[in-house]
Image (cartoon, rainbow, N blue to C red; front, side, top):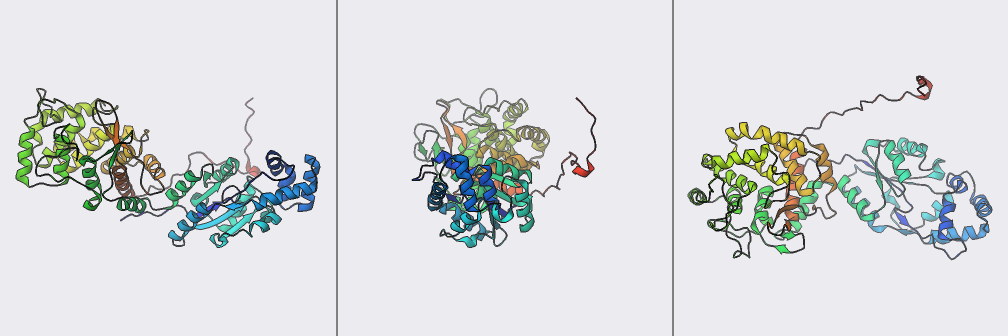
Amino acid sequence: MSSFASNFTTLIVDIGDVLFSWSSQTNTSISPKALRRILFSPTWNDYERGRISQAECYARVGGEFSVDPAEVGRAFQEASDSLQPNEELISVIRQLKVRSNGTLHVFAMSNISTPDYEILRTKPIDWSLFDDIFTSAGVGDRKPNLGFYKVVLARTGADPSRTIFVDDKIDNVLSARSLGMHGIIFDDHRKVVRALYNLLGDPVERGRQYLTLNAKKHLSVTENGIVLRENFAQLLILEATDDRNLVNLTDTLRTWHFFQDNTEEYPFDLDTTSIGLTVVRNPEDVAHSIMDDMLDYIDDDGIIQIYFDHHRPRFDPIVCVNVLTLFYSYGRGHQLDRTLQWIREVLLHRAYLDGTRYYETPECFLYFIGRLLKISNDGYLAIHIKPLLIERVQERIGAEGDAMALSMRLCLCAYLGLRNNVDFRTLLSLQCEDGGWEIGWVYKYPSSGVKIGNRGLTTSLAVKAILEMQRFPSPPPTPSMAPAIPSSNKLIPLPNLL
């Protein structure tokens, strides 16, 4: 079960250019550029704060911009007539508010005059969505002035640290952030909708819905768009979710092939077979028989190979780790001592930092090392591998990576007892509107370097990582180490340093 509870209880949204769009193109002599210049004039600011009437505003603007006041009125009437609600954003906010079960309060905050607000309220949207609406005319102040924000916070009782503020102007967002709110600049509709879902929705529930909706269709894809039916990702999805209904697997009595429908170009491999035998348990005698066969594919250096084919001598440290996991899970790890020694050297000297022949990222190597330790629960590995793994994972915290790399890193951190709030926040922000995460690259064709990934696998590991990180107890709040600046009546004089 997910223990998710959104940290945010208040959403404050701008109206113009966020909840409503409008056109500055009118059938008057006032150009769109001139109309927007009027909106930023001191006179218009006074009008929006309720300090002057509409008639006085139009008259003063007419004089300042050398235009007939009646023409100003016609231009703004046409602009008001062009107002169109952002139905999708309004629907998203309504949906999020309903799903919050009463914990999310929604407010609007707008720089707008009383006459223009009265026109706005005639527009056909569900105004009951808002718990309250604050206008600059009603408050007597306007964004980005801090006083406006402080009035809204005081009247709503909102906690700034639990408040999301959305506005299209960076000055307004900056002021909100300076008071402790989470500010979102409305510069891209899709980005904002995604951010709201990620801040206010349950990431685990949404991820699971994506996986269920696409059950049996979680196919792998190359970076150039070729769809692959393969077993490796299906096995890892099954391991992460423990839900056989989500995957399509090619059942086998003995060895596993990476591909499901292209089994002639490449031989059966020890990598997929090792994953398969640790995820889908075969009868013990069959597993031991397969491991006996694997021991025939060790090179002169004592390194286990990739393929069940002596004509394809290949090795890869991650494949070695996965075969070691199989052997250790059956108490036979000692038979691959030289392979283990080499793997430790790879870990010690960070030989994995650019990926491997078949795997794309350093996180792949570290993740499967962690999987080896977890599945084997072996005391020797805990002494000789685990401390070094902890060091190497700590080095990766905060490093750049896609959702797949972040999910692997976070699963490792959870297993090793390492708090990683930096990557946790980044992973949460990468969740897509449909609840899944974008494809992350896991392996690649060695000859061409073409990368292969799977959205279902990325999402499965992301959900697993979030669940495991949520089990960490919340850290106590850490106040800023910088002392607060005294209020103006208590300022301490500083020496003249010039």
